[in-house]
Image (cartoon, rainbow, N blue to C red):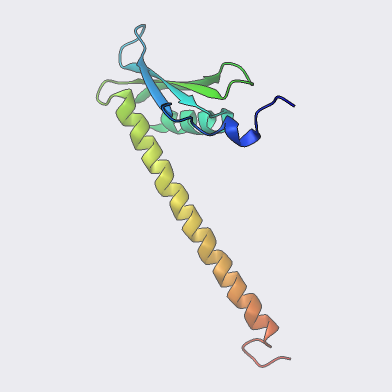
Length: 128
């Protein structure tokens, strides 16, 4: 087959930029961000969280074609912050939230594993 390996669809080539900002001339305080090697998953996540930001007036995304792993996100702000500042802030907040989720899941897993090991050893009350 002449189709590329699946992992190559999401690896950025050397010299390629993962994110490119293009100011949108039609509206003030608006930029388009092109994210290479991404799809609806990241586009939807970012646009929904951008919409919740207090300085964002409009945010949306589109995938031009399913076979082209590229997402365009458009962000318009109220002018107190640039679209780039807002995108960086939203990404930072998402990283913080997902890191916390990862720590919480790991802690819960370890607690359940310890409880399970205790049950196998007869438990705290000496059952066998």
